[in-house]
Length: 399
Figure 1 (cartoon, one colour):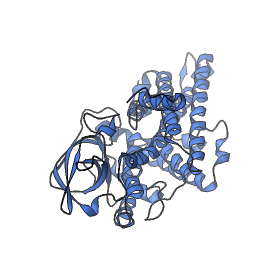
Figure 2 (tube, one colour; figure 1 turned 60 degrees about the vertical axis):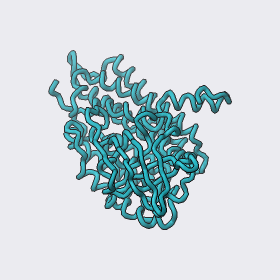
Figure 3 (cartoon, one colour; figure 1 turned 90 degrees about the vertical axis):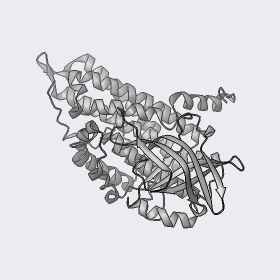
Figure 4 (cartoon, one colour; figure 1 turned 180 degrees about the horizontal axis):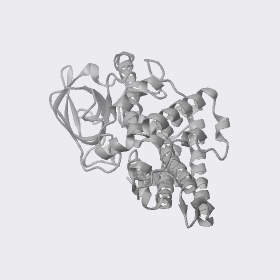
């Protein structure tokens, strides 16, 4: 139970690429992939298990992200990375191959909070907030989910009431990543006057805003989710997102993150497969390496086949996104398929490592726990299934 896998050489393989998908990347995309992979291998993997075990935010790693030129993802201008959808997917994949908490932290900050401002804010609001967020001088959070409204987020009950030149927000939010840390919290609330959902940027500290870290969490332990209470929080009209007029605008932001979840899942699955393969090569049982046993080879091949399928899903949604043709339903199908498949690959990897599979130093159990959160957020498998089912049948199985 004390054997520690030597993973120092994994990055040298430049990733598992059995179907030669690397040929379809541009040099710019490939260089971004390599830069993040080196960062993960050299800086993330040696330390991240300790942060995860202590449930501490890995600030030294987070502060390195602007130097990699990845903060802001596909957002152009205002100091953001301006990555292509394919490059942004590769970045998410590699960050999650290292640590789901690190990838989720930046996903919340950039993929949700910055994206909300970029898609729904005025030019003045973008210029005011995005440059500081791109440099991580200001941290962002995205407050949509409520205690009684998880998958049914459109039924949110948080209210916004106009009072002169300000808005007054009241309500509760739950599972809000970075909610206790953020300087800027994008809060979605229902206007009591017209019933429409609107977006507001709450600049902290703000009177009436109370956030508490959710404890007892055994997935994504190094990123903090919060329960938030909003009691008479006043937001200037200037801080209302000027182009957010209904829940459809909220949905536009969320649609961009479903595809990202498919890439995230690919990163976790890649970590599981590559670790299992390396372990089976090194581990000797009954007088010979595990890879010499037929049943071990069969299991590794099945893992590779499943992983390659996940890669092809991601490649296609990347192509569709770059062509401006990625629909929320297609992204949802990719998210559903990849998170489910990642769970299967990681369970197989954990079993192939035997008792050593439950040790944090071998990483697999951490990925196995973290994929559970990704499988759930941005729409559960059940919800994504029903959305795709509605699309292919024309019949809605839910209200």
